[in-house]
Each structure stands twice: as C-alpha cells, then as structure tokens.
Amino acid sequence: MKITLITVGKIKERYLEQAIEEYRKRLSRYCKLEILQTADEKTPEGASAALEEQIKEKEGERILALIKEGTFVIALAIEGKMLSSEELAETIDNLGVKGVSQIVFIIGGSLGLSKRVLDRADYRLSFSRMTFPHQLMRVILLEQIYRSYRIITGQPYHK
Image (cartoon, rainbow, N blue to C red; front, top):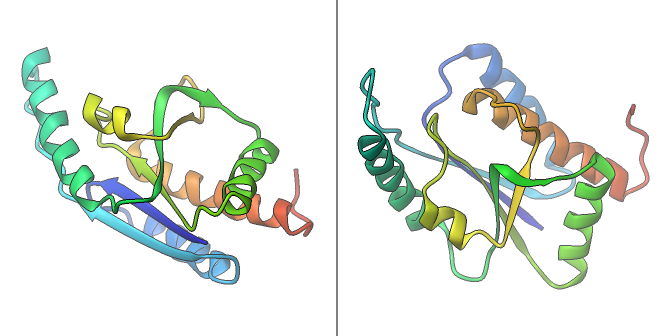
C-alpha cells in the first residue's frame, strides 16, 4: 500500500521534523510513504471571511493538483467522522482488501480545507472537535497510521 500525505505549509520546528522522520522510518516496513507539501497562503490579520475563502481556494487548487486519479482520499476535517485507532486500522485494512493501492490523507492549512477539496474526498476523518496546529497534526496522523499497521499485523502497541 502507498500512503501519501498532502499537507499545506512547511514544518518549521526541528523537533516535529525529527518525529516525522521517526515515523517515516517505522512505517517503511509496512507501506510506501510519500509526504507532499504545498505552499500556504499568508493570511493577513483580521482577514474578512471572503478573503479567507479565497485563501482556502488557492490552497485547495494546489492540493487538488497533487491528487492522482484512482486514489482513495481521506480529508482531515473537524466535521468528519471520529474513529478509534482500531477503527482506523480496520478502515485502512478494508481498503487494501478492496484493492485500493493508494490512500491520500490531506491536512489543510490554518484555515482548513476548501469545499472543492472536501467534495473530492472519499472520506472525512476527524481526530477531535478541537483544532490542532496543522504542523503537529502531521505527527499525530503518522503515529496513528503506524499504530494502525501494528494493529493490522497483530503486533503489540501500547493502548
């Protein structure tokens, strides 16, 4: 299985880069991992709702350009479905059984995802009703993907 993360913006903190690299290494025995970053738009202080929509649309266009035909797309969205770690593992496993060879996870920028990106998604996943920094969300998502593969393969992983 190929797992692709499409993310908006660059990682700015060294400790987050190190955590991402650690999970990239751990996941290498279970799947082929690709992380694609697209530029984020600068949001001026006190931006209007219309300007924020324009920014999400620009970022969304960049995201959509990176999605290959035939991939299963999971968008991280606060209004998505919340799953347990076991349910996420089951979802990933079931997709593989159904012949899906590539799953794309999308993490938006600080304003979230455009409607076009959300409409393109095959599934909307929420980690919480809380908002997390999009840079930190990469680490959290990679950890959960790694945990999913440990669950799928019956290997121990603390609960």
